[in-house]
Amino acid sequence: MNNAQKLRKLYRKTQNDISDIIDYPKPLYAAFEQERLELPESKLAALSEYYNVSVEYLLNKNK
Image 1 (spheres, rainbow, N blue to C red):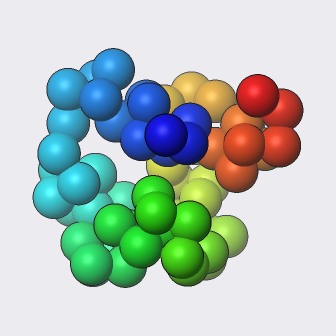
Image 2 (image 1 turned 90 degrees about the vertical axis):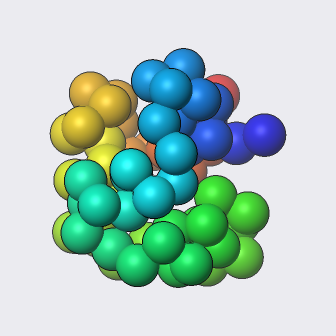
Image 3 (image 1 turned 60 degrees about the horizontal axis):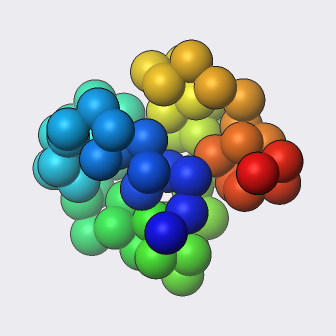
């Protein structure tokens, strides 16, 4: 499980919730969590701001 999934579950949110929060299609967000697709920088920034973590943390670069 990657850090984005861990945070989503910690916050008790669904992939639909997060995709609505960052205004990004749910299938594409799901692919990001499955590490099959990268999020655009603007969406990574929105996600990191929502969780109050760094982009690097979301990308698992500083576990």
